[in-house]
Image 1 (cartoon, rainbow, N blue to C red):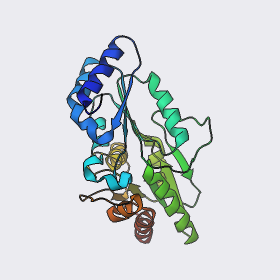
Image 2: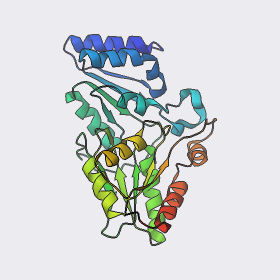
Image 3: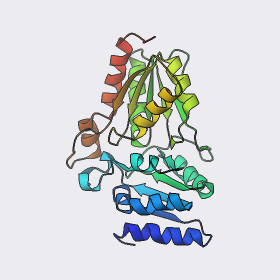
Image 4: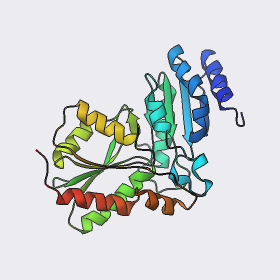
Length: 266
């Protein structure tokens, strides 16, 4: 469909109406052009499976015009939508397959670069679930990431472990619906100390989903640090830009240290 994103969604809608299961994909930043068609798909009860690639700072040198910082918020706001954000090849394959049976508007956010495979082949990723990749009975802080920031959270947890600060790490691959039970349990286990890191604007993305879930669930005593892209980036390498925005492993570890040093809230 070239740069005609509205026509991309229109064609997918037509295929869905005819009984097919269409998947439509483009750069995540450019799905904003088709938002009216997407929201009308929800109004009409159409099943659409959408994928937004090249999301966030992680794409590096392409610059801010190509970087999606609003897409998670945009799709979370669609009535009845499902929003997914895998962190490796295994979860991407599994969630792409799971989308085939999801009703309504479903959205899969993908990154550009190559990252280590975290899960074995055949691992299942239920919609509304999450994965806890680091956990112990002595965890002092919870690190929540998705996509590229999950890898940063894992690196931060390794650094913190060497300093005697055990950290729980949660892969929130299902942003909507989010795994409220796992988040609540982690908050209880770590004294309400939670660091959320996302390659997205602070409004409406992973951080909002996590905080909304905890507050709605009546969880109290929270001490949350939300790391997100709060300024307009330039062009650079992924590593440079993630550090500039304060969402890389070093900044996540430092945020966790500050929370660990603060008294737990009652």
